[in-house]
Amino acid sequence: MRTLSQASQKHILSLLDAGHSASYIASSTGHGIGTISRLRSKYRSHLSKSLGGRPTKLSSANIRHAQRLISSGKADTAVDVAKALRTVTNQSLSAQTIRNGLKDIGMKAVVKKKRPFLSKKHKKARMDFALTHQHWTLEDWKKVVWSDETKINRLGSDGRKWVWKKPGEGLSDRLVQGTQKFGGGSVMIWGCMLWDGPGYACKIDGRMDGDLYVKILEEDVQASLAYYGKSAEDVIFQQDNDPKHMCKKAKAWFQDNDFNVLLWPAQSPDLNPIEHLWDHVKRKLGAYEIAPKGILELWERVEEEWNKIEAEVCQNLIESMPRRVAAVLKAKGGYTKY
Image (cartoon, rainbow, N blue to C red; front, side, top):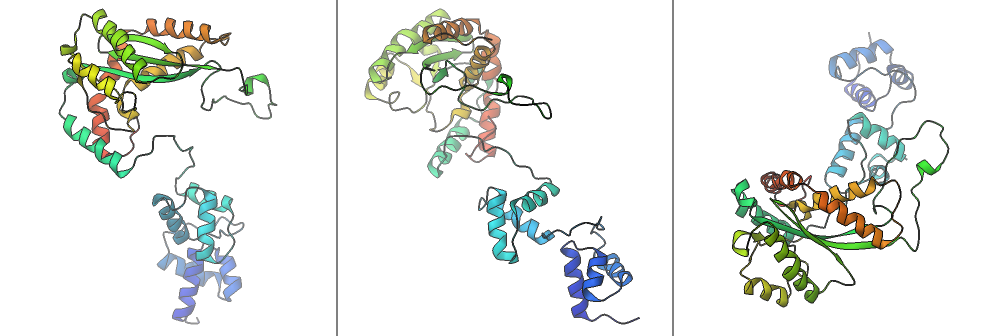
């Protein structure tokens, strides 16, 4: 039996690493299939045998490089990876080849979630908040009055809607989400919630400014506390860092009325459980079979669904606060699942 040189062995092993079959390597190098198989058994036993067909253009090293590109944020899509690998492999690679390779190692493509941008400053503020409140118990969080604004569209959400489709089914009303350039409309709503249940909610007509916000504080926040038999000294008020919330008039109102305001990190809706209360309301509104005829009817439905919210819904959301804080700590101030 002819002895293989080190160079020949190295060449054959590189072809095996690239995913080529024993028959392909034998025909291209002139060595027997038995020789190729013995080398595979001795040095590359971890490689699965080829099932035939066209050999892959991607080696295991290429796949690892692609994974590093994605993990480091240097590439997002298969197209990005294909472009980057072309300079390494000196061969043309299709995006589909990359997709197949990434799927083989258990990766899958997902839609990027839309979240507020977090700078280093934002992450530090979130970490500071989490460190300050990591030992807060549920009894502490029960004192917080959570507040926020949201937009509700007359003709459904701004996001994508999913539906199941049968194989070969043509386009129909069931598979289409109708849109309108004009005439859809929406309402802006301010609301709050306590451990005891939902507070008052109000429709915002026109542009929200400092004067309107102070009016909401004076009327709706105070009415919410009075409804549950509470006063300012019993609660901690939460709001985000919107300029109208932080204006001089609002700060003066809180001071004059003896309110303790929770110091809140910017860009942190994931920490605010009332965000999920809005989701609850929007799901209820989405269950109506017929869209509201106008904005007034939409607001009537919002009021009806808001008034149906039970205390248990709010309590389940507020109970998540220790977990939310822990998630921010684990993410070192970065993005969380909430």
